Image 1: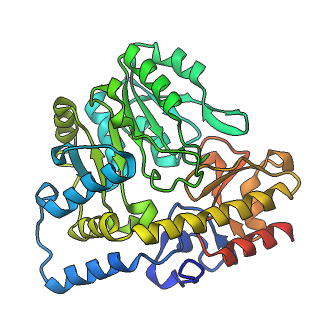
Image 2 (image 1 turned 135 degrees about the vertical axis):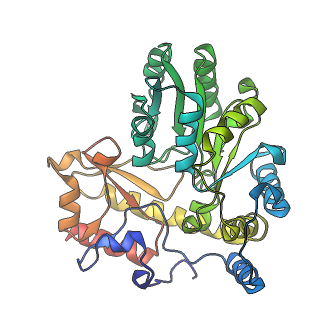
Length: 375
């Protein structure tokens, strides 16, 4: 019932809804959900604000939030980390940009798994680096990395860093242990560092799939940078709080040095929300996954019934990467918007023939979108 409730976000200046302000278009684009936060998170935020003081708090000193991360990773992924491996960042976007600064020199090449979400695609150029796309291919009804292209491009000595998104945004695949092992072998044999954006790792919808954090792979000897957050799963992205797990002390020092004077500390309320999410919201989390599985299955079935559209079932995330090439249009985004639906334009992710639809919403809104699409 809690996920079925429609909440009016327009008075809160929510970016998703502001984009189509005064237009009769249902926004289904940016990757936050339409779900009210779990009550333990809201209660923890109320308790913290009632304390009345919001002064400086060094994230590394917030013992309970750091321990919550340690315990969550142990429970969810059997990954046993130490608190000093945690580097708090105000979002994964600043984090992978810091990784570019820390590990590359101007003119170096950065491998980017594509399609990918716009800030990640933009990171190399922002840091005076050269982006090299590593495409995504369909294998047996599932999207995966083009490993032949990765092997070829990683051999270039100018390539210093490979940034991936796992689970993959927008295509929704969860990289298998075998796929991650192959990535490790390619990176290690070519002296390429790996930065893995795993912000959707707690939203695994395929019950036969299992997320494996990059930093857990023994072959990397702790040198991989793993980026995570409670933000997508628990819908607290507006609190600007995430964390990097960097086991290797030298890499961690480079990362922290690159962030100095540029990247601010995460907020007190963000730490509070993360702690509550990882310690008090297990039941809510499981209910969310059940609800999203239902939304995903409904959307996959409905898209399959519409001529010109194709959707490979996403294993994770609340995002659907819809192939609209069968419509024979130059601008699928306009086609959807003209029908009253506002997805993310595929061109921003690297392929103009696709759109990305966010199904992290009440079922009635998803049904409304399908009705508009079929009208």
